[in-house]
Structures are given as structure tokens and as C-alpha cells.
Length: 171
Image (cartoon, rainbow, N blue to C red):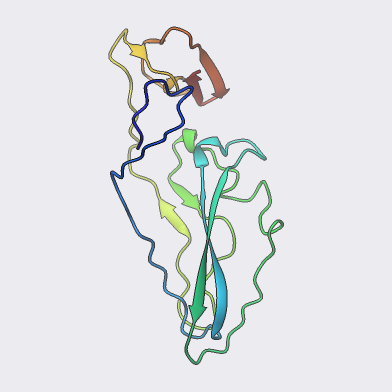
């Protein structure tokens, strides 16, 4: 995080850590030895309810695999591995989904072993936050949308802008 006096013009020159979480990945034992790039991506489902609006945040890691494996999976090409209408790419977070399908192939790597299940289950009841009755809603906070039960008005110099049928934001 970075403390700022004005979030609309701040650069975030000094940062401090408040949380960390590693990523643990098991490389299948039958993958052939060699140098690899591991592509890790996160999607932003809050904007994925319209075709072509999904956001991807991608990182790459350099790996050296050792061992006696011989599998060389075919792989997929980017761009082209996903379609804008694939489940998980086109996803409406605001209609109370009960599951989410991770985009792309099932994974699992080489030719043996189990393949992880790519579907996760949503919490039984989604949580939302709303300002106190009649309160002021901060910039970039939700101010409306289908199913939203909050009240209040956007802070001065902002207005409630409809992003989609399920989400409006003070901007």
C-alpha cells in the first residue's frame, strides 16, 4: 500500500507490504527436463460481463525442470487460446453465480497423474457493503445496480455512473 494525499494525482512513491501469499505449483514428474516459462494469470471477473471486457493480469516465471520425464505437451498459443465468449472469460459476477469455470484447458501437464478440477464454488451468500443510511459514498465505491441495497450519495465532484446493469460506481 502507499499512503497518498490525493488518489487522483498520486504516484505512490513509497510502498509498504500488508500481506503476502506465495504460489505453489507442482510440476508433473513426467515433464521432460529443460528450461521453461511458466505463465501465471489472474482474471478480473468484475468487468467480464460483456464480450471483450475481461481483464488479464499475467506474470511469467523462469523454471528449470530436472528429472527423467519425457512428456512434451502440445500446448496452446497466445493469442488464440481463449475466445471472448468462453466460460470464465465471459462471466457475470453480479447475478449471484454458484460456480466459476476457470478458462482454458483442464491442465495437468504431462501424460499421467490426476487433473485438477477447474471449477470453484462460490460462497453460499455473497456479501456486499453499503454506506450507512443516507451516508456519503466514496469515489470508486459502488453506488447502485441490480440487487444493490445501499443508500447514500456520491461524494462531491463525483457522480454515480452505470457500469453495467449490476454495478454502478461513484466516479
